[in-house]
Image (cartoon, rainbow, N blue to C red; front, side):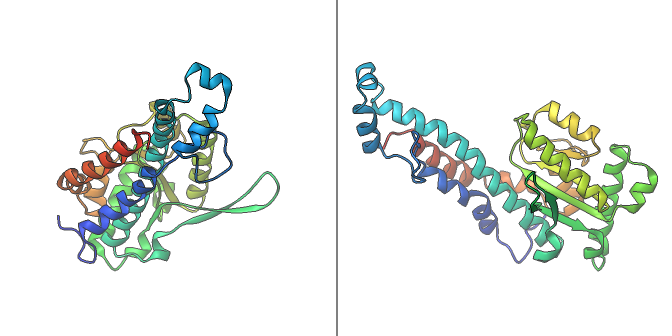
Length: 272
């Protein structure tokens, strides 16, 4: 299926991969408050002037490289996640003919200090926003019904669903309770506004414990598996509901993506 005419594959790749460039220049902090991090020469001064670390040999360039790689890997996952969010949103917006306001969804929470905070989700599809695109609307509505039945929503709730809101992630292996509680809070807010809450993961790197908890809370989780079932697969969802072959997009551009990623990793794994 062709890429939407107002977007080239190159522009989609930029949305996905450009955040990774931030990782290439990552410098470890070593307790410094400087947001730019500590350079190799600064590290040598810092550890070299520490008698114990110098005696033990921790002022070695390899120690700096180890810190750089460890922190850099975390940055790679974080920035790849940012890229996936941007790509997900752009494809949904372009494929369904939505504008920025239509593809956006926000909700308000009260923090512990009593102040209000506005949280923004990664994408939204409201059936009313695509009512002039009957084929796309039918595809999304059919998908919504399948997913709601998969989650055992009552019939009356299924009839009330007006659309879907998404959190998009590159992976989700963490079982962090704070992150889970925030996601479940999003799910409650989405359902209260008659939207199906969905966590869409692009890879297969997801905690099965988290998936079970979310699905038990009536939140859909779809992942980057090869299943043709669009109630469990991110790629099947894009194919059937959005009309975009996301897996084929990645396959066509794998050489470019691997080259960009390897360049970042190589830089992270060297001291300088």
